[in-house]
Length: 177
Image (tube, rainbow, N blue to C red; front, side, top):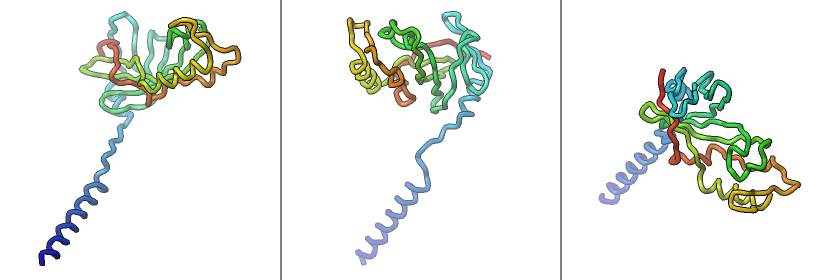
């Protein structure tokens, strides 16, 4: 009798566990429209006088000339953007290479009607970058890196969305209509 009761309890618990873990998908899917609702047609009052506007399909226009492309909404008022720029603006060690461009991902965050951007990447990215620097050139000083003559710039490890460090953020300005 006790064995039958015990087996019934086990079966109920197993069924309960299976039902709860398969019918409720714990993954959250974020819709890019959620980000668009937050920022559509918004402008930013910046502390430094630069003009930030959200245009088109969530892209950012800076000073009416530089466009940063929207990639995806990450939830929690965070979005990933693609920024193509000269590599010497990316890091000081590339100051000798003003004509090389790269595309990297950066994050933008809205908190309390304020816009922030991420200014750093995860340690794994910096390790990958450092390995690339050592393989493709040498440091003459802390901030002076010299590329090998036969360097293939296409192998440069541009940061991806997985490399964004969301904890390192800098204030851009207040969001206004």
